[in-house]
Image 1 (cartoon, one colour):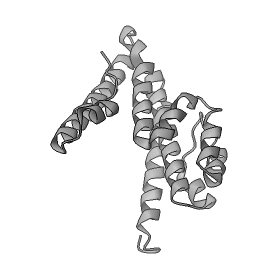
Image 2 (spheres, one colour; image 1 turned 135 degrees about the vertical axis):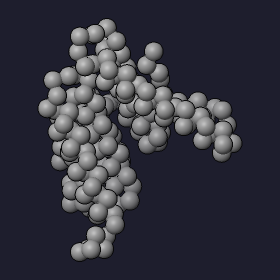
Image 3 (cartoon, one colour; image 1 turned 90 degrees about the vertical axis):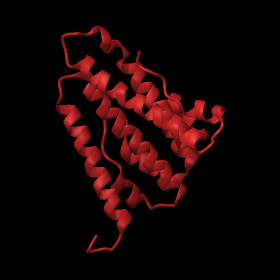
Image 4 (cartoon, one colour; image 1 turned 135 degrees about the horizontal axis):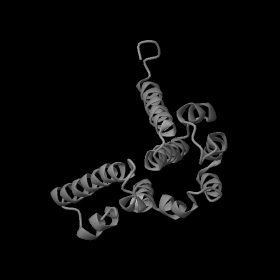
Length: 176
């Protein structure tokens, strides 16, 4: 920050380092829930960064610098797609395991974020029946985080007098 005076560049470096740390820690774990969380967190953040960068006209170099590597996305292809346009980004994502989320991404980033959260909850559901691993505890903590997000959405929606329909659109599925 003192060298460039660019706060956005500082945020980019910190955010990418945090994602790389999450991803690296997740990859080192033997538990599948932690690996899944790290992969999905990194990939969804990469997609959101690419879309926001595309909408604000960021350069290829900026996007490449912002994206953190992960297994389920080719960040180089994602960066080039983002520079080419939103339709190209969606076209690339249709070839990945995030294809089901493209329609939500076309609606809005908040819809896509909800889809990612719901997908994670759906994928950790089987951990309830796996008692001799770290999986149930990790799944429980992720589910609690999801519940806290849902309560915040409801409370902030009510506080800001947002319609019940708009609030319901943003609610996540629950891990029950």
